[in-house]
Every structure is written in C-alpha cells, then in structure tokens.
Length: 415
Image (cartoon, rainbow, N blue to C red; front, side):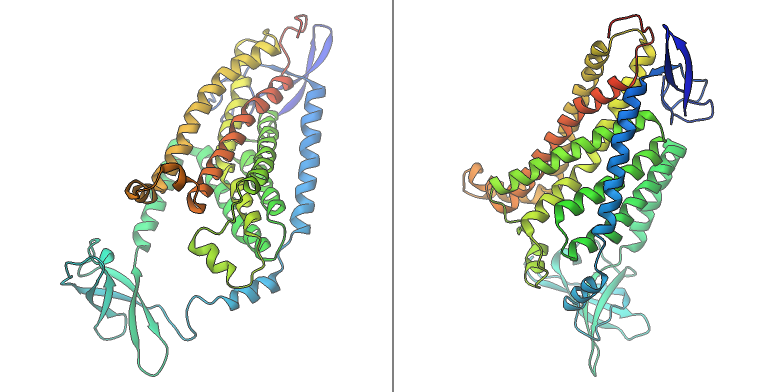
C-alpha cells in the first residue's frame, strides 16, 4: 500500500509499507514474513510516476491488442472441421484388460491383448510392443477406437492414464498449497488464468491468421499482468519487476525475430507443423517459431525479475543510506548468482526433454556440429539461447528500475 510519508531531509518522500497482515505482498524487509511491520522505504515520486505511467501505457496497448487480435471463431471452426481427428462415426470406448500377450521377441511387432469393452463383448486387439510391456495387465483400463459401419471393429488407442494424472495433479496442488500457502494458491490461480488465455485466446488468434509475434507479445503481457500481481500483490515492487519483465520480453521477441531469419529456420521440424502445413491454415511457421521463443521465455523471466526486485527492496531496507550505485551493485551480485543457476536450469531442462534425440545423435556417425545444424535440433538451440539472453538482460534492467524507484533513507547523501 502506497502512502505519503513525512518530510525527511527537507523534502517529502512517498512511502511503501507492508501491513502486518500482508504475507509478503508489500515492499520492505522480511518478504514472506508477517511477524511485524516492514521498515519504511522512501520511494522516489518521479520514479514511481514513470513506472506506473509506462505500465499504464503497456496495459492500454495490451487491451488494444486483445481486442484487435480477437480470434475469428468462424475461421477457427472451419479449420477444426477440415482437420478431423478420426473418420466420421468413430467412437472411443473404454475397456478392461483381460490378458496381455504373449509378445513376440521382435520389438517392432505388436502384441495381442484381450479386452472387454464397457457394455460389449470381449475381443482381441493388437497393441504396440512398447505399450504391451509397459506394465499393462489384467484389470487395467484402456481406451479403444471403434470404427463406424455395420460391424464393430476395435483397435487399441491408448492406456487409460486419467486416474494417475489426476492423482499427480492433486498431489501437486496439495504440496504447493501446503508449502506456499496463500501465495501458492494464488500462483495456482494465476496458472489457471494463463492456461485460459493460451487456450481460449492465443491459440485461436493464431489460427485466425493474426501476426504470431503480436499475438505472442499481447498474450504474454496479459498473462504477466495477471500472474505477477496475483501471486505477489499489487505493489510498487511488483510493478518494478513487471516493467523489467516486459522489457526482457521485448528483447527476447526482437532477438528471436532476427535470429530465426539469420539461421534460416523454417519452423517445420515436427509432425505437428507438418500436419498444419498440409491443411491450408495459412500459418507462417517462421513467425510461429518466434512466437514459441517468446512464450518459452515467460517462466524464467518472471522468476528472475521478481527475485531481483525483492532483492533491491530487502537490501534497501537493510542499508537505507547506501547510494543507488552501491545498491545496484549489491543487487547485481545476487542477480549474477541467480543467472548462473537459471542458465543451468534451462540447459538441463532441455537435456531432459530431448534425451531420446541426444541418444540418437550419440549413435550417428556424423560430426556433432553438422547435427546441431539440422532443423529439429537448431530450433531448440535457438529457442534456449534466445530465452537465456533475454533472461540475462532482464536482470540488470529490473535491478536498475527497482534501484531508481527506492530512495536512500538519508537524503543528505549524494546519490
């Protein structure tokens, strides 16, 4: 809550206070603690006006973008009907497994599985060898594909993982709320809102033929406004982090746009893009590649910027008389450590998700550099490196914004 403070050193200073009942949402010392009032922090009125003004302009641009890039539901529905998942009359009933195997020794062949569809008679379907040996057994549930026509013909579709996935999701929510409490609950709400924006607006807007980069920037900015203020509270500290995040997002978008063209990436590297390109969607896959870079950078940008803004607030509360330059240098020392750990996170996250591809690369009798230049691998390299550069540059930017926002406690000191 921003309130007017008393005169200090002969001039009026704005104050940023955190009430006793606020669990770390306000500014000041002791983020995340509610054991007493946070110390006063002098806030530069000019800097506050600039931060709030820039965010107001940005939110206006986001609102215009959301309306101007609104999805064309008629076109999206037309594309949906042009790309059916299965032939007309096909249904997907559930069934119980009665027996699996015996499976042939060759892993390229299928295995017989006897199943009993719900409300139907037992039948035998062929199952991919990998699915059959994944632990399926009598009593497990699977989903079949039943083709239309006079006589029912069943085929295997997938294992029924709904129960396990819901259990995992419930455990995730329970752990987050138990550890982070209200802050964690608000973060989950923000995650839900982000999903709604992506599924309900961003994806239909892309299918409507709107410029992917503008769609990505508008949707990402809208998500950032919601998740940062919802999870961290409406405060000047959060506003400083948001401004730094938006700056990092613009850097990521610009660098991604240039890099995609310099590397001559087509954006068509997997089955999904190939399928979309064959159905006359009119999508620019190079532009979509830039869109994926922007969205991929959202999570890590949010992480480092809110941390940097909080670090500046805490350092200012602990040392109210140090100059802004010393404050910036101290916060950047924290930021450099955070950058180092986050870079590892990006690299190892990619290594984990692309482990199968990396194994194949290990087996190929080709120089590593030649393989890194292939479309599929180069896309991931560009996406990771551009996101990392945007993340790194967002740290000094956010630190500078936060440092300029909080004034030294002793205004007689030269700043």
